[in-house]
Structure formats: structure tokens, C-alpha cells
Amino acid sequence: MSEVAGRFVYANPPAIRWGPGSIAGLGEELDRLGAGDIALVTTRSVAAREELMHTLRQALGRRRIEVTAVVRQHAPAADVEAAVELTARSGAEAVVSFGGGSPIDTAKVVALRVAERRGQEASLPHVAVPTTLSAAELASGAGVTDASGAKVGLRDPRMLPAAVVYDAGLTLATPLELWLSTGIRALDHAVETVLADGSHPFSDVLALEAVRRLFRTLPEARARPQDLEVRTRNQLAAWFSFTLPGPAAAGLSHTMGKQIGARYGIPHGVTSCLLLPHVMRYLAPKRPEPMAELARAMGTTGPAADAVFDLIRDLGLPQRIGTYGIGEPELREAAAAVAGRYPAEDLLAVYLAAL
Figure 1 (cartoon, rainbow, N blue to C red):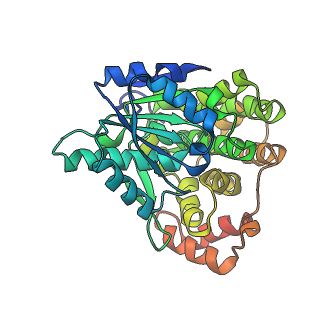
Figure 2: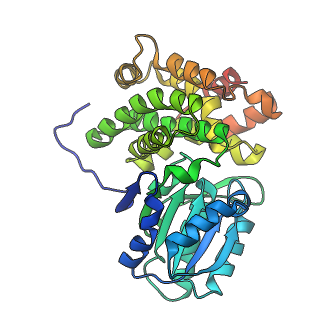
Figure 3: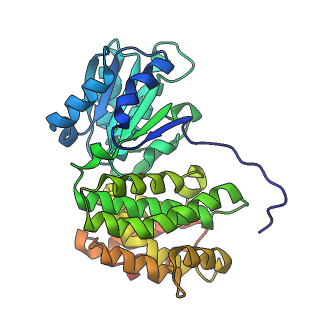
């Protein structure tokens, strides 16, 4: 792959804070953005944790939470529309998302649509405070689930969050399986970055470093789930994994996962656990050089796909699609929906390998 010439467009948020206690800088970020009171977009489980909400309110300082919109897994369209309506009727000047990918993606849509209703060209300022490793906060795209269960992707550069706060202390309440499985989602981002078409030397360096760090630190997180230093290293690896968000999110593992995720209630991180090794085995003959780079980053002399499969197993994460009540008829339908660049028969074989 030639690196002699190319073009790279930075597509991550312009300000990222990290480290235990970094939520204290939330007010400074909102000051920088010229924003007053906020709309909070979160999940029911996060909103119910008084210690988390207390920490957030302290970080806001003089600002108030005008409204709180609660969103369910996979960002159902009804929840997103309700959040837009609630925020539009409020006096909120900015949006803070607090939780995983679903509230973060919902907040992106809220920030844009409310601004449009108010006649503003730019989105309302959006500061994301993630509590998982999904890395949704690093991209301007958002995924919303329609009434049929299909995942609908929304794209607008104005939806890119203005700032991100990675505070490991706020993640301790996140269930360990959710934390680790979204870590595999981050690994999926990194792998899809390296395998993406075109030349992207900047992102490849960071993606390969993300692979090294995730292979080292996810087992540490399983062994020491309350260790804030380990969780911070997990967060940094997730950040590094997604500096090429568009092509990575359009990769085969992501695309196949979206077909079964929202429709059958499988979390995004888990879809990566189920599919990533099998997609890598399928792509290995087509992309031997990138696969060899990935294997070196994983510290293995064998196939990269095997190393990923073993990591997922060793973390105690799900590996079989059949666990979720899905069989060959449903997978045949999913393969047909994804087919295009790759034949439906090939994609069905990948799904069935994970069954």
C-alpha cells in the first residue's frame, strides 16, 4: 500500500480530557463553548446512580440540568424523538451525554435537531461523558433503531461532539461484561481501520497501538475491575482505535453486527465478540499484509483471528450467536441484507461459523 501521497481529515472531537477526576473539567469545557444550562441525555441505569448524578451536578457548577432525557439500548427512534422534543421545549443551551453509545448517539441527534429548530446553523454544543468503551463519542455519525428493528445511520459533520471527558472513576458502576465487550468493540474499530481501503498511515499507527494496548489491558481490567489506572488505559486504547471513524464503522464486522444487533437485542459490543474473529478469518486471504501487521501488534506468530478469538474466550465473553435465539433462517436473511461487495453465500458462512 502506497504512503507517498494522500489526504487525511481529522474527524475526532477537538477537545478530549482523560484521567480519574477529569469530570471536574466539564464546567471549563462548557465555559469554553459559551454554554449555560444543559440537557442531559443518559440511560435509566446511570440516572438511578445518585453518586454519579451528584458528581455530574458538582462538575456543572453554577449550571442547571434543565431536562433529563432517558434512552434505551440501541437508541430507539421513539426515544430519540422524545429527547428532541423535551430539549426543544427547554432553555438548555448545550447537551451532555452520560453513558454508552446509545445516549451519546441520541445526544448528537438532539444537539443538531434542536439547533435547527431554533434557527441555528451549528449544533448545540455537546460534551460526551462515556461510561463504556464503545467510542461512539469520537464520530459524527449516529445509529438510531427504527420501528422495524432496522439500524438507521445518520451522518452530519455538525453532530461531532465538541468535547469528550474520559473519567475512569465514572465507569466503576458499568457492569464488567459491558465494559469488556465494548473493549472488544474498540478492538473491532482498530482492526477495521487497518483493513480499510485506501492509505491511512496516521490512523494505522494509532489503531495498531490500540490493538497492543487492548490485548494487554483488557485482561488486566478483568483481573482488577476497580483499578482506575487500568480503566484509564482501556479508555485511551479505545480513543486510539477510532481515528478513522467513517471507514472503520463501515467495515464488514460492524456492518454484519448491525444487522443482528438491534433487531435481536444484542448489544453492539457483543456483536463484535460474536463476529470479529470469523470476519477476520474470511478476510485474511484477501488482506494478508494488514493481517500480518495486526498479528504482530497482538504479539502472536499465528493468525490474528485466532488471537482475537482466544482473547474473547479468555475474557469470558459471548462467542455464539445461537445463544441469542437466532438460527440459520434469520442469518440467511441478514446475509442477504448485507450482501453487495461480498456475496450473500460468503456472508452466511461467516454468520454460521459464529452460530
